[in-house]
Every structure is written in C-alpha cells, then in structure tokens.
Image 1 (cartoon, rainbow, N blue to C red):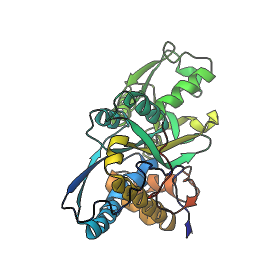
Image 2 (image 1 turned 30 degrees about the vertical axis):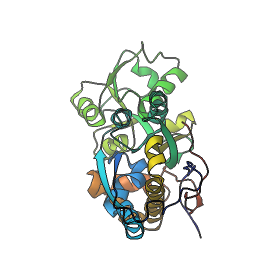
Image 3 (image 1 turned 90 degrees about the vertical axis):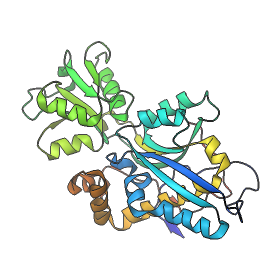
Length: 315
C-alpha cells in the first residue's frame, strides 16, 4: 500500500540471497549504535521521534521473535553532524543522520577506511530552495543586509549545513568567507549564547536554532537560505561494513524510519509534542518546521522493504 513517506534512496545491497531470516536459530546478540541530533528537527524521523516512539526496537523485537537473535539499540545524541562522523571514523557509530554538508564531509573522510566507509541510505527531509538554514542577528542590530557583516564576527558550526549556507551566501554577495568575516567555529547553543551576549554579531545555523532564537525574541532574521534557491536536505548514512554484517538491522531501521514518517504526517501536532519533549525545543517551533505547510518536506515513495534491494548510494 502506498503511503506518504520518505526515502529518496532506500538501499542496501549486499550479498545475493541474504534475507531477514539469515540468523534463524541463532542466540547471537547484536548491538547497533545510532548517532543522531535531537534538536535538528529535520532528522527527527531518524532520531528524536524514532527513538521516542520505539519503532526501531519494535522492528528488531519482531526479528528476535522470528530468529532468536537479540538486538540492543544504543542512542547517542549530538549537537551537529561532525562528532557523528568522527565516531563513525572510529567505528563506534553504525548509523548516523546529518545535513547535506556534513554528509559530504562524512563520505569524503570515511572512504579511506574500509570498515568506516559509509553509504547514504535515506533522506529524512529537504527543502527545494534551501530555507532550512538561516542567518540571524540580535533584535536590536542595525545590520539589515548580508554584506554589512563584512569585518564582523559570525558564529557557525564549521562543516555544518548552516555554515555551508553562510559561505555560499557571502560569496554570492561578493564577500570572501575566509577574509571578510571572522567565523567562530561554535556549537549551536554556544553560538546562541555568544549572539545574546554580543560576542558575535550574527549566527548562521541549521534548523531549528534560528527559528528558536527568533521565537524567543533573542534574534531576528537577516538571511533566509531560500534566497540561494539551492536545495538542502538531511539524510542517513550507515557504515557499509556494519550493513554487510547485519543487513537485517539496516532493513529494520529503514522500516522504522518509515513508521516515524507516517506518524509525523498523520499526527503532526502530536509528533511536534513528542519531539519537543525529547529535544527541549518549544512545541511551536517544532510544529513550525514539521507541521503541514512547514518548510520541511519528505520525499514521497511507496512503503516497501529493502530486503532484496537495490544498492547503496555512495556519498
């Protein structure tokens, strides 16, 4: 049955003939470590909402009932995608979700290590124009246009989707991102504090940080990433070595992600409440992005298993 769901590329493709019942009769115990960003609400179907609803544990529990193999899920919450990539490089995270710029960095850095090498397996959300990333300034700032940031300090998480938007936007306005502004590499919450205290004159971040600060009357919008008219998205990567060893876990994760996506479409307000509780973000801010008519979209596709699937997508 067709459902509104995500997965731009639902993938696994490993050994021929491998099935979900491959571990039947085994007393093996398998652990999967998931790296996610609870406050990055464009990835909630692979993180905050997925965890809160227990969809992955339920899917893996069904596997246990059929095969006897026991599964343990470990969730690790981060502020940005960079530390998730670092942990995947160290082979300590098996599946991770992050934005487009971090995904490119993840793919680049992990390719040299066979056991750490990652593949893109799904898309959690996107905006065709790029409006999920924004630059904000203090409410009383006299700055009204991006070029006025020349010679100013801007907080951003280097390598993040928000940083990528800043770099591209500055270049479009004829500024050199490395010379004309001083970019302070800060985690989102540190940057928010720096903006409020006046240590920086602007902050460039991904959802939901800019919207949160505006909602709290701690900032005003200076630049919307939609002005770039360049698509932005968030997605999920898996260590190929792990997926090769445990294809049934990846399949369960993708099916669980679809469960979360169906829920967010069918019960948007309740989903916003659950995500708010799990992330500490105001429910209104979550609903602004993930509710009907919000800037976040999920790719439509048929709900189907990746059991006999196609092929992973190299980043």
